[in-house]
Length: 446
Image 1: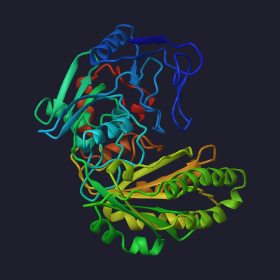
Image 2: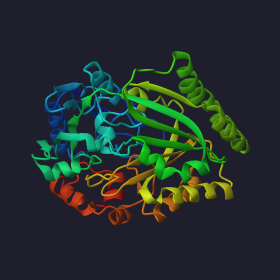
Image 3: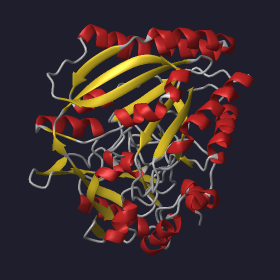
């Protein structure tokens, strides 16, 4: 196992210095870092940290905007705890080491003719980082990544290894599927998978008033529906993904490059940089951007439809609201932008999820709509995010655990019916708060 004392430089890229997240808004300077290659090495690292009185946190690839992975103690690095451990075709499951990036999992599953049922729109995160913070896509019937977990392995505060599923330590399983790193360090995860299938994606511009007027219909008629509203305009871009009998008809190489790289990343990067330098130009840029993406339809395997490259760096806040609040809250957000002097270069993303049974899932116990606001990295975002947050909390919104917000344990206890169940589990598994940090003190209390 690689264990390093940290004294300077960049721990995110090597053995020294502060670890930084993807957006660059969070840094940590741990006393030491470890890169275990097995569950046994991970457990040994936790025991050694406990003996030395160090706190312990695990980092993924840093795609959270919150300081969920920050520690001044031992930072567990994911890069050697990777790979598929077992595929059980009869059970329809795959077991994977916790540090495995989603992109590697998706590629390996595809090579075996298998797929996850649903996924988010990027795949750079590790499987444990994504599930522990509640990463989700959009779905009428299929839920978040954490809801697709059937079993997991957890290294607890005393260095013991706990196997959890619906039948083995079910009380721990109920919380640890989405555990925020508060219950221990996840060492492996087992996901439900199915034979690989095809999805037909239909992307189409649509006026804001039409999307919101037809929102319930569009969600009900499609397995996966989402849309982006471009602030300062009445324009949206919609995406409908549904299973297909085929044949596969992926985007042409040139058209895919134009849409996904040139427009969505290259030109958008320039537009955001111009907007940061000259904020008054943003409404005009938004009108051009919202008209640049044209309608297209294509059919491909799931991860190539669900996910897309995101190279323009940003900060983000996302709230989960009761599904029935979707149109009202979005209308309030649009009115906010129109009456304010905010200049917003990033579109607002709208997705849905069915209710699930995970204690700290943002969709716990209720059908959910997600509203996500973004700002280009380096652009002042606090006033816009703060005003948007007031709209979200007025609708009993639940903040995404890995995205910016200001909520505390008192607020969260009121909007999560099973909040007390999770904190009681934490008291039992980590009474000395070996896995605590400032973020967990904020959202879970002492």
